[in-house]
Amino acid sequence: MGKKNTLNNGEQLYSNAPLQNAELTSAKDAGSNPAPDNKKKKDKKKDGKPNIFVRIGRFFKEMFSELKKVSWPDAKKVFTQLGVVLLVVFIFLIIITAFDLGAAELLKLLVTREG
Image 1 (spheres, rainbow, N blue to C red):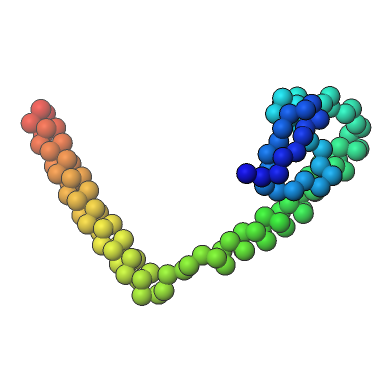
Image 2: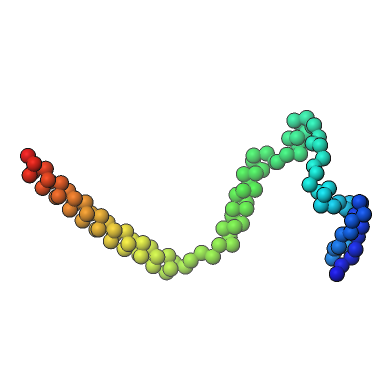
């Protein structure tokens, strides 16, 4: 199976990877968190996340990196899809305009009959 190592409390740990100077803990110990250190705000800022300009720069760098990975369509495919979109929009424009004019005429007939 793998190399057998002994944990601090005598439990057996089976692993395929060799452990070199690693502190072994059991699953029981992994759930318990040590008490948090009370550090000053100055120390926390040094250990925390980088300043806003570094984060913004990293964001744009990663964004451009991802955009380079995108497979962009060729011009023929773009114009074909543009034509389909414009055709569908034009068809719906005609349908909605027809309904609007029909509803307007129906409203005129109702108003003139009552008055």
